[in-house]
Image (cartoon, rainbow, N blue to C red; front, top):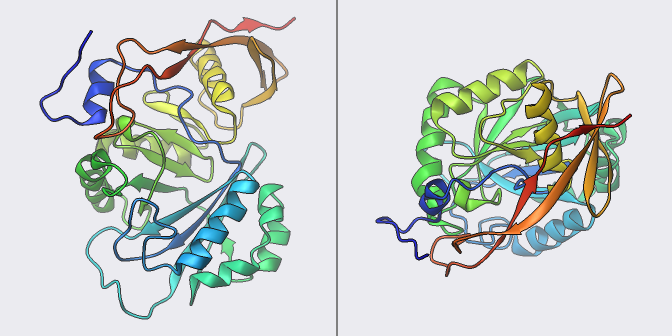
Length: 307
């Protein structure tokens, strides 16, 4: 089967093929964000007004600890060459240890003092001690991928979403350089929980934020919680759909083997979820401008109660 779209956008292929979103979030137990106005290249940590030596080395240090480092910008036009402070956020996504810290630094290189090992183990006290500018942030925030140099869909679909959200929930939305899964654009990450959603509209994005304020999530468009592996994400969503659970911290992925993932409820119940990897048919591109290929897609089966 040969598939073509009028606009050639990878996200259009994804919508037409009704590709499942579950199990497609990035994997990160925690996130570190720094505000960097101005243009971003495809690899923003080294292709922006951020010092490339710092950006590259800090990004590498984060990856080694399963942390996600991202550049953010405030919505709208802004002077990018002026001396100014930079907003910083650090988020832990682990259930029961979910928190968000925020503050400003004069220079992003001040993040060198941030105790990344403490971030990885969700030790908020040690994180603040290493960078005292950080203080607790009570309201969740939204990151929307808008980096057109990374993928056309992120600019064409992400930027209008940011503009709409900025008007509805001012001060709580940020542009982000890369969230993964271009073909699900517009995509967003909600912190501190680390839930990722795709194919959003302004209304649905506001609805997910309202749910996050209540300590809940929304199943429509849910790609997964970055805390878990991709198989764990697919399994957790399958259990949520199976029992209608929306509370963010009600479920934990407790075990994985080659055939199934075990998900446990805070009330003690548990389910075994078969998760398989299937070849996509027909082939499709995973990013704009790339050739279609037979990518692998995760499929979660029906959860079975563990006795």
